[in-house]
Amino acid sequence: MNAKVKALVDLQRVDADILELNRAGEAHPLRLAELDKKLDQAKAALENEQQRLAANEKQRRDLETEVQTQKDTIKKWEGRLSEIRTPREYAALSREIDISKKAVENLEQQNAELRATAEPIKQAIDHRQKDLLAQHETLGVEAKDIRGKISSLKDKLAGLEGQRAEARRVVDPALLSRYENIRKKRGVALVPVQGGTCRGCHMSLPPQLYNLLRSGQIDIETCPSCYRLVYAPDPPPETAGV
Image 1 (cartoon, rainbow, N blue to C red):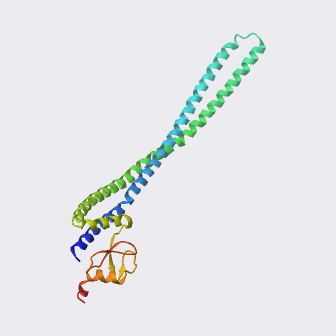
Image 2 (cartoon, one colour):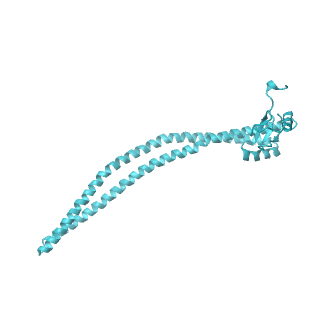
Image 3 (tube, rainbow, N blue to C red):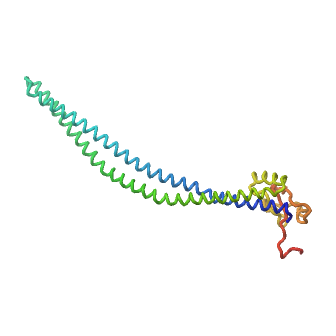
């Protein structure tokens, strides 16, 4: 294998390592997003219970205010009973007092039901808080591990990018341009020819082209089927010279 082909093979080897690392790291951001989603769901569940309790407490405060208002009215009306001179007015006011007392009973019953409802909500909040804490602990450990892996991958990629820059430096500029254009479209730009077949598309090359590559009369050519760059690799040591 001459220097021109070797330089391009070395570059593609680095590109393959970069591609492999990038693919290995693709799952990490997705998993981090899943962990964040789980935490968000746990937070949302807790916030929902807290909102339910807040609404319950507001309803109870409103009822207590209304009860007190009704009691104040009853007290005022009861004070007026002694001032009434006619049986008709007395009966009418007594009826209003009875209606208000009944309303107070209903309001206090509603308040008692709300207090009873608040207890399971408080228990649910306690459960959600413990669940959120547990999620923070378990998912936090996993997230930390993933971030460590991402950092390690970035370091490795930085090293490979340095190697790539060095490998590009020794590749023939015209050949490098062809290689980069094909790589953007095909992913793998350079493939060997084995048994007269392009290892990129697995199509047979024209016999004349294959013979030129194998004999070393040309170093690199374009596959007429997939348009990748093709070359003839060195024969294995045991078959060399046969």
